[in-house]
Length: 275
Image 1: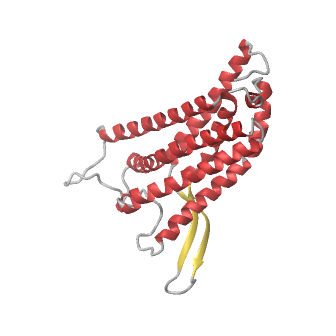
Image 2 (image 1 turned 45 degrees about the horizontal axis):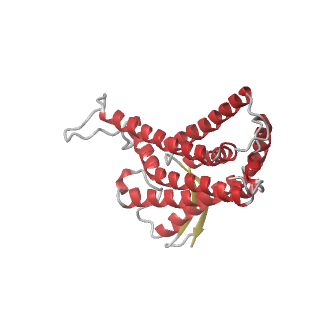
Image 3 (image 1 turned 120 degrees about the vertical axis):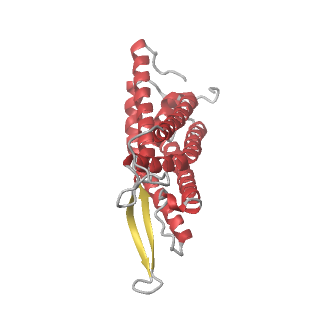
């Protein structure tokens, strides 16, 4: 990248330190949100149709608790894209995939190794009075559901985010930070939301309804399509608002890092002859 200031040794150390912090926040947040996953849904709003009538039904706008920290991952990749380039941002996304596969491997291995769980005569693990498995197996069920549904969506969304960020950065010659920040994030989060909801629904609610790991949709609900759409709309609305709000910290952090790291990300696109 074109340098506005000389890269002295202590400046290089700063740059690597900041990259480590951003990558660590991204990877830690990604792992946390997949473990929290769909363990709980937060009800944002509920619309009741035909209230107090026999055919009454409601449309619930809810988001999984794992969605709450998700916008931070896009802020991290945007900052990495801004100061360290597309290649490094893509590598962080790839390491995120490897990290979550590692989590899955440990969960699978942990369930295979012998423990002190009790089994009935049919060889099935004994559940408690509420019909739940031991805590580890409940956590594993939810985490595997979240990881399985989100990894495809994660890869698609993060790579779209990185690609669009650099597409708009090059198109505007490094100007209009708000455009590349919001444009890349909002489109990529739409990809993520649609993918993760549909994968979760078709994987668990349709093909494995007894797993208890899908969307909170009553099997007797006659408006499944509306409910699935409402989950998509609610999830995307939350992420879109978060994406708009993160424009402020993006500008603040970009200004601070520009001088702290002594880098001018926009300068590489200021000259048409620069590649």
